[in-house]
Length: 318
Image (cartoon, rainbow, N blue to C red; front, side):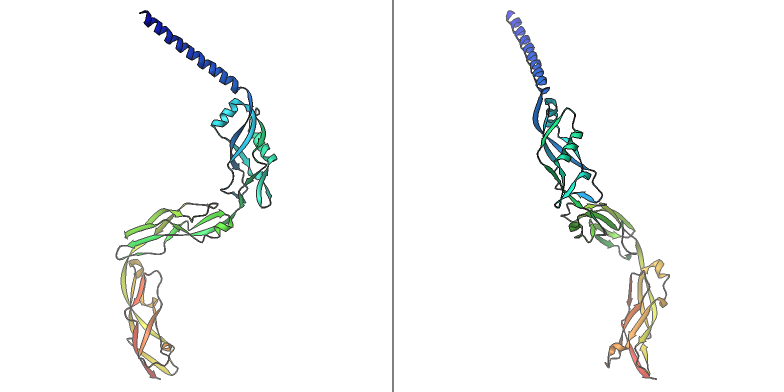
């Protein structure tokens, strides 16, 4: 029984002693942190107030080391958290082809942002070089990368539409001058029998580290219509007939097959086509055949072709 009581007292003494030791350590630690020290700390740099004519390059420093005089509490904070310093880029100077900020200007900006209890003793550099470059801009067309498979008897009615149809890029001239077009990511559409519209991402060329693009996506759309075929009988016109002669062709009317949307075919007549045979192409040949050519045809049709591309002829003197 006595041993149990003694053991309990010993445990209690150990706990009291441990608590006393912890409190003593905390008091010593706080006392030391309250003292003033000289040491180094790191700050992350945040560039702001860039002029419209300049862009920030990827090679600008984002960290600076400074020697400070302040309390241990402040140094402990800087060891745990890298404090941000804003750099006003409008105060840079252009010297020997580089954009630099003097040590004096840099110190002034840092002093304005540091606590009054902190003394800035020295920096790890005399000047801050900032990777800036003159901005050029260029409008570049967007091209659709489209794999379109239409269902049978369906056609693409008109051109593919891309919205927006161009993109603005800003950057150094040696980068943006290499860009002639921007393509969309691949769009694959199979067995299409209706209008389509797809929003897709744009694919930017590699190596443009300092260029900025105004958008990253575009919409590609198209109108799809069902088509039909219609036959037209069109008279043959012969040109370059020798003076004093006349030509009769056999046949004198040829068949033209036209493919278009049903609505468009209703608007088309034989007079919208012109079929020409050029006698001058024979160039003294004794052939009795003339080749035909479609020289005029209506717009907004899918396909126009001749049933036969030749006619026979007889040349008669008047």
